[in-house]
Amino acid sequence: MEQFVPTGRSLRSLSVCRRLCYAMWFAYLLVYLHSVIGFHSTDAGVMMLIGQIADGVFTPLVGYGSDRTVCVYGTVCVVVSFPFLFNRCLACNDNAPPQAQMLYYTPFVLIFQLGWAATQISHLSLIPELVSSESDKVELTAYRHAFTVVANITVYTVAWLLFQSQHNVDPSIPDSLGRVDIPLFRTLALILLGTGTLFSLIFHVGTKEAMSASESEIQLITPSPLQDALPGPVFQWKHWLKEPSFYQVTFLYMFTRLMVNLSQIYISVYLTDSLMLPKNFIAIIPLVMYVSGFVCSPAMKPVSKLIGINDTYFVGLLLVFGFVTWVFVDRSMAVERVYGAAVLLGAGSATILVISLSMTATLIGEQTQSGAFVYGSMSLTDKVANGVGVVLIQSIRPDSMEACGLDCVGLYCDVMVSVTGGVAVAAPLCLITLVIWPIRILRS
Image (cartoon, rainbow, N blue to C red):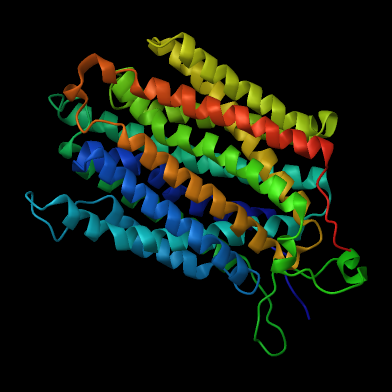
């Protein structure tokens, strides 16, 4: 059977396409629903929880299926659903009850999360297929993250340009977010959707996959000679559930994602509600974070080879702790110091995320026939934990910051410190287990 190995270029093109929409979803949906559309804070949190639970449920199922098919259907789901998420309810008037609006948005959230799960897991599962050595997996994961950062930088750059254009056209528009910003978010969503669709077409058209003689299944890569030489039965999905290293890496990945995702979600409201900065800073500061992450990505491979992946992860944690300490000490942070804190968070988040994904690829090793299931299962714990975390935080958030005065100003400062810092304390415990019991598969 003649088959085609996807190139690094095609791998990166799908990374850009899939991440553009998800970056906007994760960073801005909560802000959009609460501050722009006018959802109650708890209702906005519930919508995020629905999306995260759906993603958590879909991801292992898609992971199981991705070991047997391709991700084109996920791209279609994203294209169909995303324009409706950042637009007003087309079936509602201004007096529509919150429950009706939630009912309207829920199907689009579910379809989008199904599409995201399909593209994410199919994309991640290519990494252990393409390379076998640990350092190469770190390098490929770093490149993947670098182009993910390119997508995020694109999101925040376009958002900043739109905010600037809005102010230039009509200086009387307030600096706080409101329903007047609905067209801005709709335009941003359509620009990103068009860009992402273009890169998706580049990937699906440019990556040629040969059919088997029966044309009944598609393989992404010919098994390596080492894999062919391994004796014994195929390593199936159920065998992973008996491996201790599977759970070690899963919990480390979950804590990593909690740090990265919750800080990404709440950095916007921290800037606008706690630091009282103008709304264009919800584009500027995340942009600084991702630029710093992009700069760090090429250093991942040499640093991990020099000090090891466990110590590299710990260095990333120290950078995150530096951000948490800065926010805790400097609660009324001036604008110029916000940039420095953003650099620490961006570099630390990029480091721990790349290394945790590299550890997952190391765990999979040569067992690539069930690799997508591993990524999917780990994402399940990540998504559910993130969804529960958002709902808990939103449940203590007032629907109006004016309702509790100055007591609420420091709310998101406390969130950034306690949530990000608390998870950053739990992650080293998982890291210690990996130092004592290194990643390995016990089943022969």
